[in-house]
Length: 112
Length: 117
Image 1: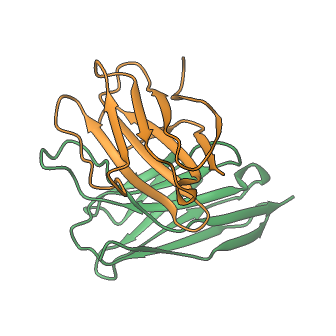
Image 2: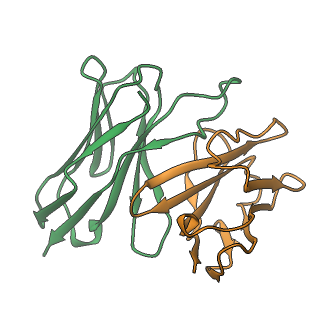
Image 3: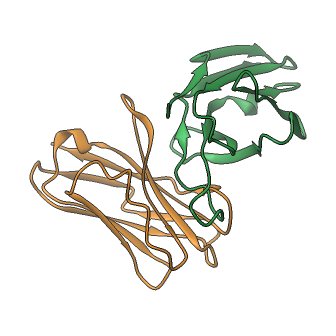
């Protein structure tokens, strides 16, 4: 595809359930980023992967959040035991060098 | 130290006018300052970016002005068009240990721009 693809586009889950969000970056991009966007907190950094280096996880808000990137391509963000404050739009971006340039349309997560 | 303050929160401009959005930062280690444009239902898209070794960068109708001593930077949209109506975010960051990427952006709170025809 031409852009960053995220799935699902919408996810409603019950409090306490685990969720997995998927990101397919642009082919050839070595860096992949996860951010989240909410009304109260704006755009927040979560984690980023750069090539084969250890990911920068410093933005993950708690140990309920984890992410992996398999084969240097697809990434999955997992949230365990979801809480209502996890409700947000989760955005993925990729780039070759520099910072994030192309974001996907996001996954809107609603925890009820 | 990590904050980026953006103003105004919203801006209404007539077609053909100049839109100006301002940002201020505290962390002097920041050395990459991008601007993003976001349309409803879409993710942000990189519009233009600047590093502090230059005071101005222009791409088409979009210009970043950078004042290192004041720790401020601004986006100017010349000849604003209704299609420019979107939310604009400034951001700032510093490179990773290897100096190869700028992944950990600190964003401003955003400015909703409306351009009236």
